[in-house]
Image (cartoon, rainbow, N blue to C red; front, side, top):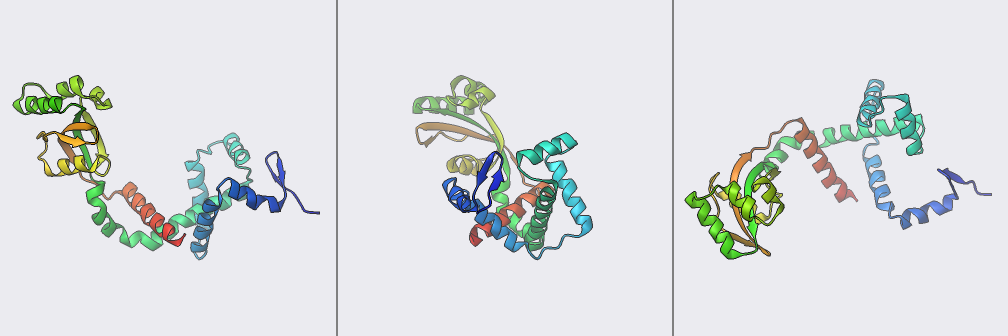
Amino acid sequence: MSEFEQIGNFQLLPAELLPLLKRYQLLPGIVREMTIDRAIIGVECSDDEQIVALKQFYDRESLTTEERLQYWLNFHYLDRQQLAEIAIRQFKIAKFKQQTWGHQISSHFLKRKGQLDRIIYSLIRTKELGIAQEIYFRSIAGEQSFTELATAYSEGAESQTGGLIGPVEISVPHPAIAQAIATQPLGQVCPPMHLEEWYVVVRPEKIIPAQLDEPMRQRLLDELFQIWLQEQI
């Protein structure tokens, strides 16, 4: 007789698991995790590092009390040993990233910096060309401030902020807006642009250069790891 697997309130035969994984579209995630396991098989984790791994996991999941810990275990259908294995695996993955791509971070940052810089800009959009032109000329003539014009005429959510948007990475706005911001002097209003159903008037306010600090290092490590993982899959 086949043995059942108990998952929560459900009993499943082993032969039922694969069809369920397919039905719920979970197989790509499993293939992804198995690919990672194969990559980190040679990564060592000392006893001291295992203690660090467990502490980091507890901190990350806010497992600050026995009650919270037990709730987390119950919610994920795990025991303490399995939790420890997960924590150590995550530590090994982080170590694998550093060992594999840590020496590439500076050069990768320089390649990506133009997309990572953040910008603050002001924007007014309207569906009427005549209004957009009137806004532009009033602004450059100093008849009204850009903030006043945005509040009065912009048809987007930016009207609530006086037209001010950001800081956001330069890759976030529409490419035409990003191009205008990159080529226009700070504080100078761009002539109206026609973007889809909108006429847009933009003024670049500030550029905040990206810094290669620790959060950025981790982000770029994750980015290189994800590129590699996609190639493996």
